[in-house]
Amino acid sequence: MPTPPHAIGFTLDPLDRVSEKRDDDAFVATLRDDPATRFLLFVNNVPLFKRANGHDPLFDAREAAQLGTPLQSVFLGREADRRSLFALSFEEGAAGLAGEGVEAVELRPVAMQGLVPPPMISALGEARSMLDWHRRHGFCANCGQPTDSAGAGWRRICGHCHAQHFPRVDPVVIMLVTDGERCLLGRQPQFLPGMYSALAGFIEPGETFEHAVYREVLEEAGIRSTDVRYYASQPWPFPSSLMIGCFARATETEIVVDQKELEDARWFTRAEVAGMLDGTHPQGLSAPKPFAIAHHLLKAFAAGELD
Image 1: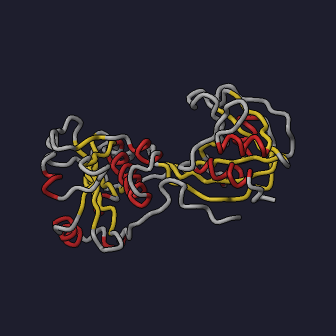
Image 2: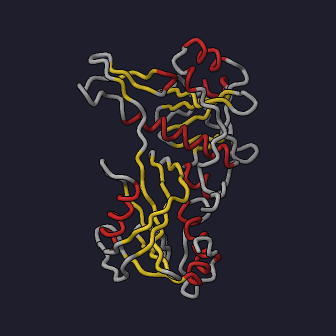
Image 3: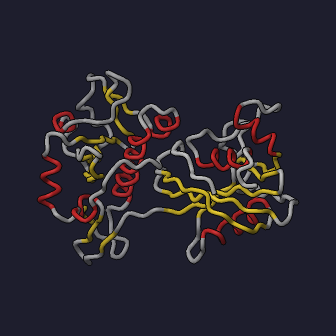
């Protein structure tokens, strides 16, 4: 399969995560106190940006302190110049930087519009996933008691039963099923008008990603498939999924749409897909933008890269 392009969002990870040093509290404290260290600030899962010159998500310690005491702190890693990067979350309504040209902007439009460089998009995605995990896992799943952050923010420990909890990633298959010169696309009610995309679904316990592809396509569109081939993956921090992009070949072609999952599903020719990608489809139909892995699955099919 072709090498996936870095235009797939959240895939250009710039950081050395130094995971072997996360339990060294003195080491982490030294990094946090280094004047060169920078902080990504989030309020209610939304990153903050300095707007004096574009969208700058990097704050120094003095600027971060103006928001008060953070709810959570996560050591994300070191950049190529060995500058450390932390993520901090604050209570909703924190306004210590108000009036200083700071704006909260949802990560999804920032990423889709390319408002910051791709490596920083990946760091912001890592930060959002981790901070949201802390927000939603403050209590022990084993005994129900409060848990505390540990390991530079990469673990939570229950002080009552001593259970350790680690960040979770939810694997999702996203697959383009082909039938010669055609591919199967669907749309959900929340999609933009006229947009179709590859089918997708969560992998269930006990499944391989190949079996998840077979099951999801059969459940959502009534199509049996085979020959699953891996293409690329994409972290998706909403809240914390890993999109596993695949191709598969249909063994039957009569579509039966599961109306609980999809609004519509149909076969599209290679020429139609090319028009959806470049905005020339005669019916005005469209496809996901280059930020999404679905775009690259469709682009590979339209370009004949699977032949």
